[in-house]
Image (cartoon, rainbow, N blue to C red; front, side, top):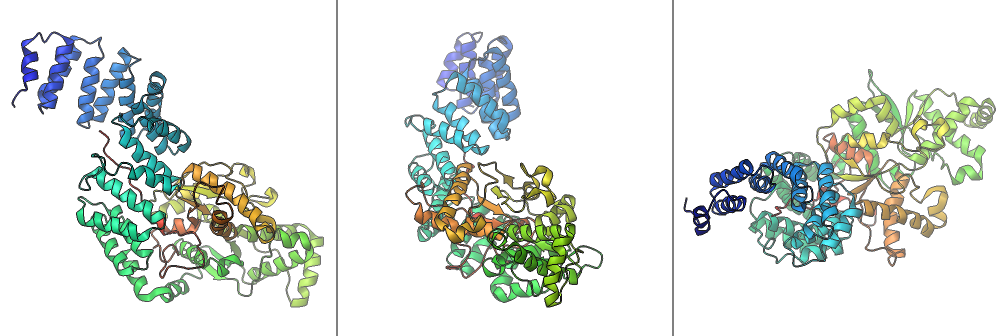
Length: 608
């Protein structure tokens, strides 16, 4: 190893000096002589144990060599000697951020903030730690402050993560602005590097989310031709861009390449090939062959209601496939009608409402199967009626007097259950957990809705209705994170006939919900009610039109029924679950595309 002039010059001086020992270590490190560098840093610690500099530089040495545990120990030793050194605390924050210990990393970043509240590097690490903790309010606060100092070396990294933050919030114009600001910077301009590849991916994703699909396709085709060490996510992103244009063969080719890189990244290539051959007829045939009766297990009768068959038939498909995987026998209630609706209809004529609902229940009684209900409103109606008629003889006699005219009688022999309760209680969390084979990585907003929780007197979760967790618990089995957000238990906006009577007011309710989802930075909304689903999905279209002057950017948050996501984690393919369909639906639900849930922004960059 050739020694630098600097190291030769310093060696002529006294190596008993702390400064000279550190300088020698730094010099040898710059020259690539790792063993010599470590020797001098260790010598500095040995000869000057009460000084933090030796520990700091050995910690930096460890950090450079990715020995994070040793780096942490050395910086902690330095902190014990000098608790007012910003560099020590920010490096501890950086180390524990890399180790994935976000809570501890933030504690260290807070100490550095107390010492240097305007230091851009300190603000940067505080910001990205909060970003990964999904505390976007403080992440934005710290990162935007750091971004005001353009000449600092940390600036391009700040802009990159501001782009990530805005992308999480669905503010794609702002995300694009931040990504474009650094695309020519030396740290990011070379597509053959990890950082350059990440930035180009994110620029392509921004264009895709903005609806500039051709531009996005061009960016990704350039990446796949010129980039190095492509990961599976790049190919999946390109595949979804193809899918959004009904370029199914190109989609299949890209997904095959993703699967070759990482077989777990897209485990449904065979299912896609089958779907492209058989189409919707093949999907219908699958449903017809699902389990109808389990002689030794759970059997239910499925009440579809109105919205599912008329608006969202894929919710029906997803529920049937999930129940089939759990070996629950399912038959449809032939001849069932509207539940009827628990709000408007009930308030107009409660007796007729009871009679119509009781008629539906008697169909399930005839086949001796408890009802499985997939709509909160239908559940609210049928559960209230079933409970009331079982407990109140006078009401039951009145209803049966009317039902007698059509040859029916309410007997009170079956239960009316929401599908969530069947999964949570009858199947059980332990059994559900066993079925999870494909862990998901999403940040989701859970929407409970109203009628599944209230009125509380006849609900199985009445003891926790003010802060329920059962829906969150089921979904988090899949690997997703249920992100806290404001107004989590607020109505979707459509309840009580509001959507049908004063649509703009309903959409204004929904706007509050969408703003809270945006602030939380969720990837999607997950619900358990098709009517809420309709309002949260179609409502975004109304908000983007009627309230365009009151929102930062149009909302494009995918809305997913929970069995679609649960089914995905259970290994069911996205085609059977109705998440990916071709040709692309036009002027029919979903009104907000859900294909983007399979695409990813990439935030794993090298920070020097």
